[in-house]
Image (tube, rainbow, N blue to C red; front, side, top):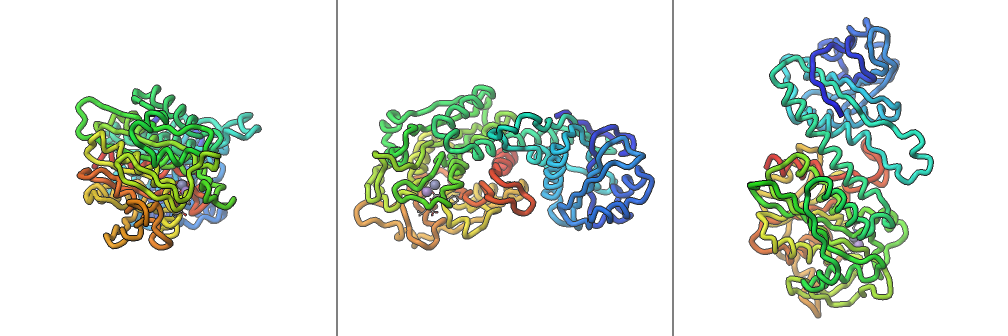
Length: 500
Ligand code: BES
Ligand code: MN
Ligand code: ZN
């Protein structure tokens, strides 16, 4: 995607589509509105009325470019009233615009943002980065498995022109747009991994995909097979994959820049399909459980972004990949397992498998002695009940870490809400025969899962656990966002890695 920043008027720009984003109802004082109205020779209000456009945030209409423009399609998007989360709205409009363009097979876009046309409001890094993120997000399709899909695939966006009057900030804005596009593409990698079904992205498929990404980007990768994991005492992790035909493995990717300012371990849940094991899930609940490796997809997306942006933090992406199945050697309800840190666990539900895999992966991460550890997991249905499909749960021991992650998430449009970890609830995890039970009862399920992980998070290293069971995957379009994998929270992690 070629990026240009300039002051060419909309009427003079030869391109495929023009996107105007305006505040409010696009009243006459709006500079973007005026520029467009002038370019088409007046009558814009009537046109928009015909299209049913009312100027709500996120609303986007398209109409063929009237005479007077050198473009073919005009898109008018609403930024809502001033004072809202303009960055999120810009990202949203860019997403929708890219969707329209790819449907219409258009490849060149001119963007006229109202703030850019208003001398009192400067376009800044976050809003321009959001354009890049949104354009990549909106152009994404998952049709790898449609037999009619490749006949006429939509072309990639080739050229983006961003209107900007000033001279001195142009390189900064161009870099921000590029940066957003890099992040958007890294997020799409995570979406692809999650959207791929369990028969494609099984543990060996996930390893192969990670290897390919790593090789192409100067990321190093090591893989521990089952025997190596057994040697390290990872019985909790290995138990989960025992009922599957494809073997479990622990994957460790490293981005190591020269003279890193700090070292961070990102641990992702990587259950490539969660049938529930012997405590089998009903069919309807299994239907989306290819998404249960969404934590690993997020850490892969984040390390790819770190490498492509050349970030100065050493990043370790770690995931214990397995499939929770019901084969002859499957682990049983009542089994007692010894985790790598020596603690014993009574399995009272084979469907609470994620925490078993993470227990050993967290212990492994501790062995690297990083400055902090973040784990990401589609861990509990209870977290979805608590926070719904847009918001992730976050908890842990790293106070500053959680604060910084939450604020990065707010800036990136990937919100996280902190859940408490009350001491008293620890007794819910008591077992009659082992150190811990793997389930904590009906209430506070997201919290007891976090408290379970806390028993395995290495002491003395700030740790945050992010439960992404809700926002990882939408089983239907919601709030104008597409069906399927979201890539949550690759943007937030990259924002945090860069600016915290
Ligand atoms: N992978 C699921 C959690 C999940 C549910 C993710 C819905 C995304 C959407 C996890 O392994 C699981 O089955 N958790 C159980 C835990 C329970 C048995 C304690 C759950 O949430 O019901
Ligand atoms: Mn489960
Ligand atoms: Zn699971």
